[in-house]
Amino acid sequence: MDYAYLTDPGKVRDHNEDSVIVVKNSNGEYLLAVADGMGGHKNGEIASSIAISHLGKRFAEISSIGYKDDAINFIKEVVSEANSQIYKYTSENPESIGMGTTLVLAVMTKNFLLFGNIGDSSGYVFKNSKLHKITSDHTLVNLLVKSGELTPEEAKDHPRKNVLMKALGAAKTVEMDIFDVEEQVDGIFLCSDGLTNMLDDEQIARVLSESSSLDAKLEKLIYKSNNRGGTDNISIAYLTRRGE
Image (cartoon, rainbow, N blue to C red; front, side, top):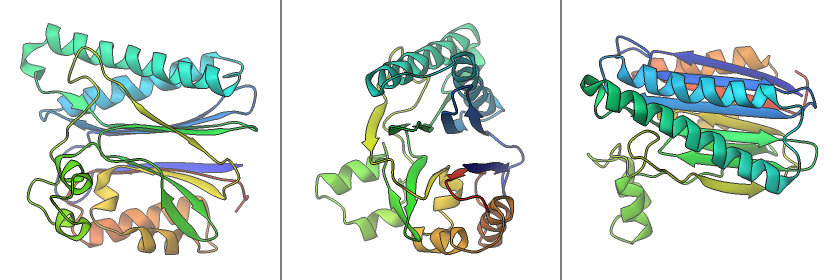
């Protein structure tokens, strides 16, 4: 296994509200996570940092995440704990009302692969030089697409496409969508919408298919996103089975 992760403020925002992490525990199991904070005035940065720091700490503390059912329970537990921490911070700091964060994660072991998400950061598998999106965005426009009120094409440029229907820390309780995925993939790719708003899946896949190092690939994706405007913070976590 080989992995890399990178975050960049982009070209428009004056600070970075994203957080990203990849952790390997003592049993050779991996946790990848990307959080895109919201709330402004550095509150988004606090929310995403709380979420990512808590997940990383809890995962690093365990020798093994166990069987698949154990892993699902672990994900639900630590995400609930992170949500409570963010919600508590908001209740104790009234100026941070509206603070929250998206969260997309993946847990990979020798026997299974799980994805989870809240919000509109994206989780993909990379297989046969193609990206396949696993997660489903919790946005107003995605809800309208599912109900047939918008087409996918109309949703791409909809003025309210960034309106979230669910975020970590926005309510006392939150439920993460969890996806059980076939583990025989070439790579796991997570990113904030700062990347997917600038590049489509085919453009991302072309860069991931190049023969350069993982670090170089992520740097190129961020460069391309910034070259197209860099309107938001950009964060990526990438794990591949092939040493490059």
